[in-house]
Structures are given as C-alpha cells and as structure tokens.
Amino acid sequence: MLQKVPNFLTLDVEEWFDAELPRRRLSEPFDEISSIEKQIDLYIDICNRYQIRSTCFVVGKLAEKKPHIVKKLHEHGHEIASHSYGHKLVYSMKPEEFKEDLHRSVSILEALTGEKIKGFRAPSWSVTSVIADWFYATLEGENLLYSSSVFPAKTFLYGMPGANSNIHKAAGSSIIEIPQQLANLGIIKTGIAGGTYLRLLPAPVVQAFIRMKNSQGKPVFIYLHPWELLYQKYPVQLSFTENIIQYYGVKRNAAKIGSICESFNIQLERMDEFISSFLAQNE
Ligand SMILES: [Zn+2]
Image (tube, rainbow, N blue to C red; front, side):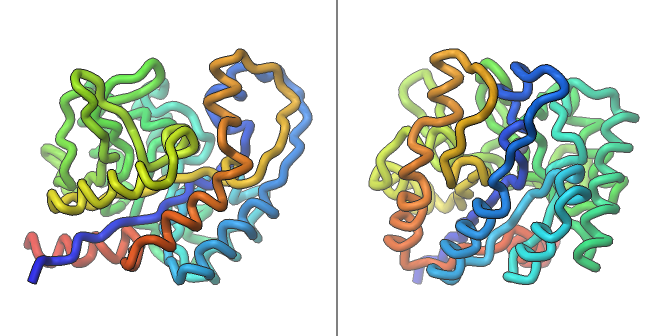
C-alpha cells in the first residue's frame, strides 16, 4: 500500500496593513480599519466544516493587541506558531534585531496558549541564502523545531533560488524546513497553493497540482491570510499590479478553499504533529 503523503492548511495571521505592499504605501498615522475577527470566524467555520486542524503562524504585535483571536484559534484545535513580532522582512534585519523580534513573539504566544511554540514562518518568505546560517541558528536558539519560510525561486520581493524543495534539516542546524512547493513552467517556477497564486488559479488546477506533488511523495501546504478571506477595501492607494496582488479573487476565495478541501479525501495535518513523527522517523 502506498504511504499517505500529508498536506497542511496554514494561515498567516496578520492584518492587511502588515502585508508588504500596502505597508509600503502607508504613511503614519493611518486608519487601522480591521475585519480580522470576522475573517478568523470565517476561517474557523471552513475548518470545522471539513474537520481540519491547521497551523496558524501569528504576528506577535497582533497577538498582543487582540489576544482573543489567538485563544479562539487555539481552542478550536489549531496549532499556534510564530510569524515574527513586527512582520518585518527577515533579510532587512540584523541578526540581533531578529533574535529580539522572534523571542518577543514566541514569549507572547506561549503565554497565551500555555504551550511551547515550535514553528516559525518568515514574513513574505524573506529568508535568503545570505542570511540562512544566522536565521536557522536563531530559531534553534529559541528552541523551535521547524520553519516554513523558504520559497525556492526568485521573485521581485522574496525567494531562495536553488534551495532544497524537499522537507529537510537546514544545513548545520537542527531546524526542519518545510519549503513551499512550486510548479515548474519551463524556466519559470511559480507558487500555486497559496496567497495570490491560489486566488488567480481555478480550484481544479490547485487540486491537480497537490495531487501531482503527492504522487511524487511531496507534501504540500496551502497558505492563506485573513485578509484574503473577506473583501475589505483598504484606505490606501495601490498601483494596478498591487491591486491584483492584494484583491484579485478575494470575494471567491473562501468558497474556493472550501471546494479544494471538500474534493480531497484526506486529513490536512498540523505541522507540529507532522514534525514530531518526522523527527521520530529520522532519528
Ligand atoms: Zn505575513
């Protein structure tokens, strides 16, 4: 019998104004309108409907301001992991600054959940080969077990071209990396199962991609943001391309996620539970 390949549903829990493109266009002070409570409720409804326990990477400053969001996700059986404190690009920080930012976020989340935080996702996939050594050493220093931060190709904002695209132990570190799975379209590599990519593509394409990767033995994670689940016009002027990246398909996205989850006769796992069995098998 073929061994079942796990897949994961992940949510990067942040406000629309934490996302890189609107953040760059904002001048302080700005109108912090937020629909995040409604967006989180919608997410929890989808997960309950399909009996999914997911991994939620939470921004620390949001957890500090709205702790009830973290508690609610945790109470519904979702793993709480770190998405940094301030949602700054990791490659824009000095190692010492990143260490403080990470520690602050982990402390807040552990106090809220009463559990050890095990995972981290870098804001906007902002890990590069230049910073990889100190990045993983800092996660290890904070006693984390895994990272899901690598986009193994180059884009205008992020990416680590040539990175190992399998789940692997980071070089010289105990940290397990769960990289994003990409599609090879000739010389171009592209994301499929999350963010703007998922909103641009029809659900059957995303489903076919996940099945194809699974047939190669590769687990796939779907990733979403709360601001991708419920349309909300931001009080900020975006360019034509930025508008597509931020808004395209948002109104249809919750239904699309539902149809993707419905079509799979699989249990989507929490990353921490997968990591426990991965470490046990690879000891
Ligand atoms: Zn983020």
